[in-house]
Amino acid sequence: MKKAFSLIIVTAFIVVMSVIGIMILKFSSSSTVHTARSFMDTRAELMLRSATEYAVLALQGHEINSTNKCLNKIDMSDNLFDINITYHYFVDDNCSSDIWKGCKCSKIETADTNGSVLVYVTVTSKNPNFRIRKVRFTLQNP
Image (cartoon, rainbow, N blue to C red; front, side, top):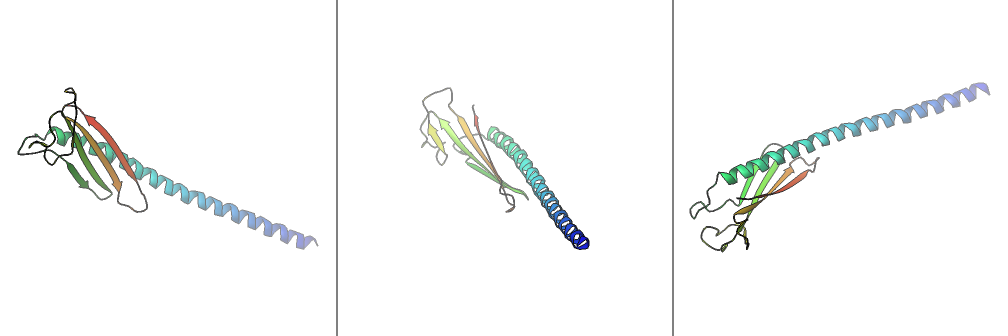
């Protein structure tokens, strides 16, 4: 009777230790996935900041006239992310004039904000395992 009871105790102990081992492995693998996700999220946030600065720089370096027209969209890409930059202009004259033809613009009534530009930046991951999409809006006044 004592030997059979010892065998049952040892078997229960082995089962409990196996369950604990499986739980440890599960938590360690989820920690690795969380670390990788956090790393990609941080990279996407930094890419979003850089793309926003680039969008403002491109806007400041572009002269809007009847020859150059306006910036509508900039698409960029690297190994990990797709970056899309879209511009929307606010002007106090007619949006259908030669300068603004083909531009995304809205007519406004205040002269203080004439020439303001809404910059819409989107960063999307290419990796199907990490579905990350970051968006930033910024309003640039003249």
